[in-house]
Length: 493
Image (cartoon, rainbow, N blue to C red; front, side, top):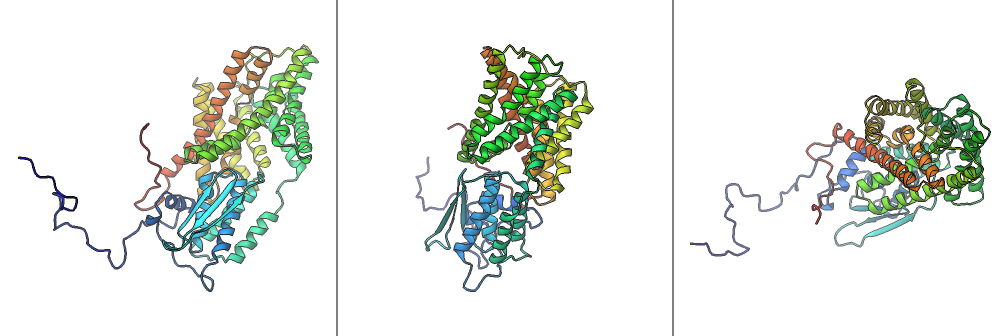
């Protein structure tokens, strides 16, 4: 005999009066998730951002200004801090975490920050019956200055510290100082670093002393031409196009002059200094963390910059082919029989890359060692172990992300200064050059295959760095019972 269908208001069969939950909300409220205070604010803010608004822990009482916090000014300060972080290349999730931390530090807990590639917005609703307050800000200019990025992180860390109350006026004053601070390295140092980077990259792929000097001079000339284009207001596409020409022209000139050097190493070294690895890693990171619009915009930016490099290289290669330069697209660059030279070159490359990124001097040594470790891992897997270059690159990039994240957490700072420059030795400069050379000589199939390999290496770098960042968090104590929740989706439908 089947039971009659019950009403939705009937008690379920599994109900027990002995173990029934409380009928009313306790007088002291429902216990919320407890987040430890001895972990970086990035992890605490990410954890709360991934919670529903109703489940987020309420902020602790802070010393408020008379009449309550000035909501418009707090939101304006939050947007200005987010603008500096986003313009400096920080990932969208970290920017949202920083904006949320600033709002909570001033008692605004019901905030929802939103970050896209060029637009920042934040909405604050005091209660369910009050109208929300929304503000937005557009990021129109971007620049690479990791010293300024580190200063902004220190400001957010001070604002997030419950034992240190920073007033709005003090926060605005420090923010103005950060904006006014000059870059730590002058222009001539950046030009020299660009040349040393190209020279180190040329030695990394098998060049000698003559190749080092040729690659360095060509890269410095390309850097000066790019600065000239920037001063004339030309977009970055044309800056990259012009900067890619001198290295290729130098390699072709050495070939036509019958100088016994590895011209391919000269050209490859120049390309290492131009490949947009920083934007690629940031774009893939945003995609993996669910910020698909920002990721698509960043990757589109990478594509435009890469096309600029391709156009500049192909123009010079076509000229070289017409002049009779004998460039072999099937050549394989050496250097694997000189492990000590390669390790030294990889460390010099990471050091000069750190200077180009305007990093603080205190972080240059750490990122240099990180780059050397990454190349040791890559060389041991690829040259000694015979593992594919894509898999070796992914593992080496994962080591970079792991060590970079641990170093950043140790100093409560951003991970970008410890990871971006360290991936420089892993960039696929030779694969890009040989692919373009094959296309210039009408060997399209071989050229596309080499460019596909370069794209695979670039994606391996980006995914490896992000995976290393996530693995590092497994060893960090983020909270008590809670974990940093991720998006949960259906499987394919």
